[in-house]
Image (tube, each protein chain N blue to C red):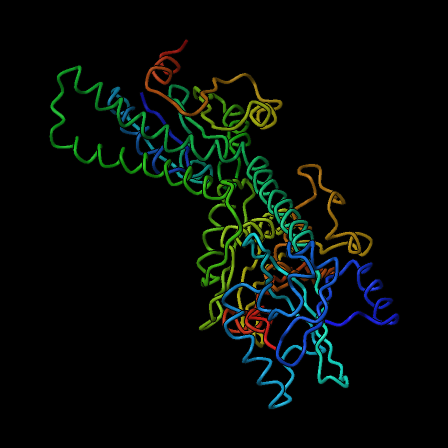
Length: 115
Length: 383
């Protein structure tokens, strides 16, 4: 599976990419939402992992845009923010999987395999 | 002494009702009058004091030089204490040395020159000053804790980043290892990265701890700019707004004599306020710069927000008058108090009409600060 990771923190995105490759996925990293928007939109079979607090276009906005695609990819939100801030950012968004930081491999694997 | 005359007796009873200690000495520093207040203050009866050298009530280090001071004045007429009054130290019969305010007057009598000393025990005043300083330092600390509290969620987020990376690096190694994958070529690299992330988490904790720990106020000669840079880093830890920060350092600035954490507290406060003010602008930006003006080192924090409304200006530096939803509204009041305790000040140019506000922290350069401290020192009961 192809996994897109939109994360501005270099340490988090590097370690995510290592573990995802380890799990056998093809990983593409973007430091911000703009980076992803400049390329071909993710396919419906892809997974996009989005950090909520991104510089520039926010994680919430990127998720709204991705959900409007003809065949939207699987979306996973990762965030270290408080529940209140998460709810605020994701207002009006169709339900997505949310992983709170700090992340671990098990919960990531769990989310990526679908339930 | 002879039997006192009626007018002498009347004078002595007046002296004995005085709340201040009163000592009269002659040209040879012998005690002629030692009133009731002095008896209590020094624990010596008038009968024992009269006729003795006034060194009796001085700590040894003053006593050694006192005769010379009196002699020098009588020879040269140069007044070192007469008519001035200053803070000296006295010695109680039990050996306790304590601060006194002493003012000395001079009278020419048929029996020669006499000196009249009026003494006030400064301990009660010192105690209330110390208590006040203690309360103030508690409040200053409280404001720092409150600032960290307000940034709490954002700092937790900042800690989550290295913890996430650390966990994933370790789990990547664990998984490869348990599946028998040969990772020898990369494991060193991954472990280094993991250690780097743990270090990053440690730095965040360290920076916060330094800021919130309770310490007695101190003074060190420090360069202002590195302190400012650290404080900006700390502020940005807890920052979610996107903001451009322009940083300019004044050329060859002298050091300042400061409590580094308290000064950083001011910087954190000013930078947070500036970021908040600028956040409503389409291109949020703040400028943090330092410069030298006369004998002062000045930090300017300029934002490009809307400026400060004229109606908010009179209460800007008052505690609890903030219009902000969060926090206690103590930031600027305490920042100004800290600045003034450092012999400096916190000033504001409110801006407005398309110009943002600019706060200026003024601190005396180290050299001039020591000169002022030297002048005020209590250096003995000379005269």
